[in-house]
Length: 492
Ligand code: NAD
Image 1 (cartoon, rainbow, N blue to C red):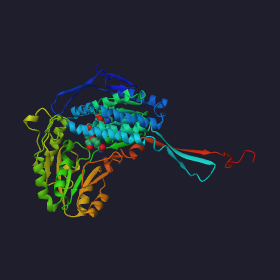
Image 2 (image 1 turned 90 degrees about the horizontal axis):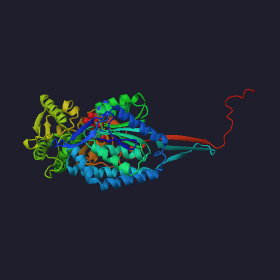
Image 3 (image 1 turned 90 degrees about the vertical axis):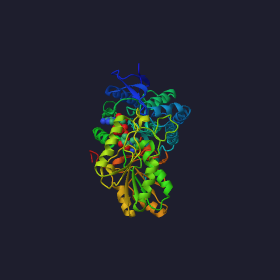
Image 4 (image 1 turned 45 degrees about the vertical axis):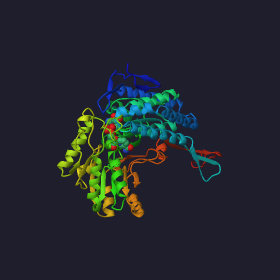
């Protein structure tokens, strides 16, 4: 019997008995069969998380011990790195080496929040009266629902799981239905390390049934979601009914601004990384190349030449430099997006097609460059979430900033220049949550991550990513209680 739901410390099948077969997008091979949770399972997981939270079994565990637990999780992940990386590579189709890098980031994330767990219990506030003791203490929020996407399945989950557990919450994780295996493995780690039953629960299943209750149920106090803008709006709207705390990490339409004085080779090389790593299925992908007019022809010629030599392949193909898209359905969407751009007058410089005969069983899409793009075009307004770089130009710094900010999103972006003044003026004016100067993609668990504008609400990582999972409570004690005299005594 397939029993991959982890509810109240037990591995159980879906109440309906339904299952889902997971296949690798690189070649269609079967990866595993998992339980297909529905609304009843999500509700059972919420009840287990509430019971655990109300019992205070994890919330009242000393913060230092919660931190120790997370350090032990990091140790287990290090020991089982190969098993986890393989599971992630098979579910997503990404190269094993990329999944291994993800594992290093996940381990670093658990260590970061392990360190924060007992660092800041609260503060004393000066009430201006020596007989008053006034303090602000931090407490866990309660029951946290977590919904995550398929591009970095365990990494996106880790950004939520680690701070939530560090702060003493109970939680329910609902990973993307296409990539459930590392969610199952991490619950196994929690279980074996003795996390109290109900503190962490897992439902593997679709968003509309297994995920939706997490944003509507009155017993869920916080919903943290990473995924697309359209789903994010739905979750925000349904969470408003019960006024949940909400954290949203949504998409991006991220500018990569290149000035003529930038290091040419480094800028071209990083433009490829920005747009094509993980086949562009990265929320912060630098898919909007905005290049100074005077170097545009030379820059794009070189970009196209390099893009054409990128080798596609599956997780264990050592010659591969990039993997497939997540599904045939997603590839159709990316292709339709490119076609729409061409219909609008954008010029296809390379790509725009599926992988060749050797990749016919996988969901590969060739690295694509669309030129002759201008502000307002469909391809610079909507996310493709595929390997599609668009090219716009500018002639002045002002125009570069205006173009880079001309989007409803605001997740990340980069500026390439050898002039420090230009770099800092431009980066201070870009309305995006992460700015790279002469680099693209690195992030640090110690630094906040999140979006301006419609890229999201709240922050993950850093210190703010811990605060999302804590409530501040003010406790005011009068050590010399006295009659106030505000209301007259009845006999006066
Ligand atoms: P998606 O919004 O379709 O799905 C994300 C998750 O939401 C999945 O687990 C899905 O099952 C669930 N879901 C779908 N409908 C739901 C509903 N009605 N109620 C509750 N849950 C529901 O996104 P996706 O296609 O999996 O991921 C791609 C998107 O994620 C892109 O837009 C990308 O930019 C974004 N993303 C953002 C970040 C970030 O940090 N900002 C990181 C990764 C991905």
